[in-house]
Length: 293
Image 1: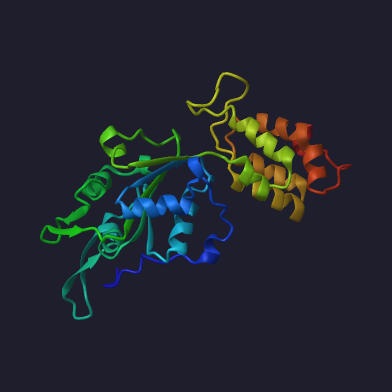
Image 2: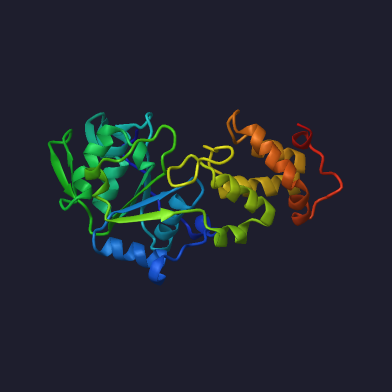
């Protein structure tokens, strides 16, 4: 690690130009919600399935407000020193404290995004507790117990997937630190703007309705644990039109577990004609490996 931390960046508008923002109850826009939370030192928790735009929402706001941005990857391979900081030799071989990405953004302000909060390592959760409550500070125990009060422009946002394999439930003390809690569901109004085939979207919605999520009915038909994200649907259409429908089917099916794939193949078989017609493909060649399986 060098003596200069370049982990923070300001997202460009081009990076998030594809994002379609949501409007919440009462006509509250995403920008208004983020502005209010930042002004009043309120932390935001966004829960939603894969591909519902949780991360891109935060990125888009940071780009519009020209804010520093850093996303904390919550996984077992996380390097705590890179996040918090440590002593490193400078050009004269003398040890010098270098802020990690979290420390730097707390000092300077910006949008700190905690990805997959319900998968956060325990040491990270404990470290951030004081940042997310009224203290709005962090303590660098490895740097003479320096206490850093958060910059007035710091906005903390976290996201998480609902009840996915490998995740854990948030305890109440941790959850209570996020005053603004949002749910990003798959939005048909948004998806219709980016997905050409209404039949493909209908297929996805049917699969989502039998997911293993506790808030979905799980007692009818095949239960799909794999989320059917807009990204998967967009990739299907791009491959079907750019390469071949058969190849797109293969890639689509390979997103799912071995147990789920037979049901996915049958669903594709049942709607193949309509999808191809809506994508402007040759409807006379609808026989695929999936249809024959």
